[in-house]
Image: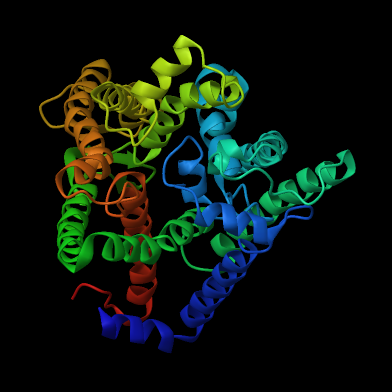
Amino acid sequence: MLSAFGRAFKTPDLRRKLLFTLGIITLYRLGTHVPTPGVSYSLVQQCIAGADTSGGFLGLANLFSGGAMLNISIFALGIMPYITASIITQLLTVVIPRFEALKKEGQAGQTKMTQYTRYLTIGLAVLQSATLITFARNPTNLFGPQCTRILADDSMVTILIMVLTMTAGTGLIMWLGELITDKGVGNGMSILIFTSIAAYFPTQLNQIRQADGMDIFLAVMAIGFVIIALVVFVEQSQRRIPVQYAKRMVGRQMYGGTSTYIPLKVNMAGVIPVIFASSLIMLPVMVAQFATPELGVNPPKWVELINRYFGGDGSHPVYMVSFIALIIFFTFFYVSITFNPTEVADNMKRYGGFIPGIRAGRPTAQYLSYVINRITVPGATYLALVSLIPLIALRVINADQNFPFGGTSILIIVGVGLETLKQIESQLQQRHYEGFLK
């Protein structure tokens, strides 16, 4: 593999793409440390140093922003508005006929959908930046009661400038991601998410080493390598449905008569169900924090129940069961809207394809539906188990709650890493007929 990387940098075109991607990543990471106008950087750092920021309903968003959110930087919102907008547009293709028609129009329709996603991203960035500034004006909800002030100026003009700056930062991140996709290597948005999460790993591992000692640190590293190997194995696993195309005469040419297969991955939903479940299960905590009265006043009963079952480190059985149920539900839901057995069966029938032993048309759709349901069960179970790894580690080896090798972070890092390596490998094979795997 090292020799393959060496060949990649020796190839002028591929070297230029790799260096361009690294340059964009560097620019993105620098932006995460530039404070938004009106925010006192020194006060923010003091609040972060004295608070446990690993949990809470902003933990997931802070993870995707590479720590920029709690720094209240110009890239504070990170890529989360774009992720949310992309998920919303995908879901709307099921309920809005116009979006469904655009999805079937090929490249032109995809370009239009991308444009809608951009507009929605900017709208969500305005809403999320206003929400974050609301928390920044009362920073006890972000950092705890010891932090009372992080804004140097909270006038209306300054707040408008902060909203504009954060929204512009999200637009810039979106543009940088598209530049990587067009002129670099891999999917730009995925690369930026990968960078944000990977930037947290050294800090998390160092915290575990300092807090729990070298023995726990080595145990965490060993567990991490095992988890990564298992995640790679499952992410690469697929059920191949054989498809045979009958021979047909078109003019004087004979077409068809070939054999291929439909690759159905065990984890067809990717990390989307985990993101959905994590966001939804944190909504009650968010509502409870908004409804929490001032210090010294007893909170309402329903706030106490939410904090007891869904607050803290998430180790309560009610939290775990609810989290697993949401992941399983969203896995089946997302697979059902992204893979349409009837559409696949109709396309196969249109081009003379059939599954051996299965009649074309409706029987093929029923068979594909049966297979995809059976595959989704272990896929959903796998997502639930991987997502619970940080909570299990917290109980078993008393690791920090921000256990790096598990949950959303490891799924994204492994998935994006595999896809990027495949793209580099395909470009190497075009020039040298040899990739990472000999």
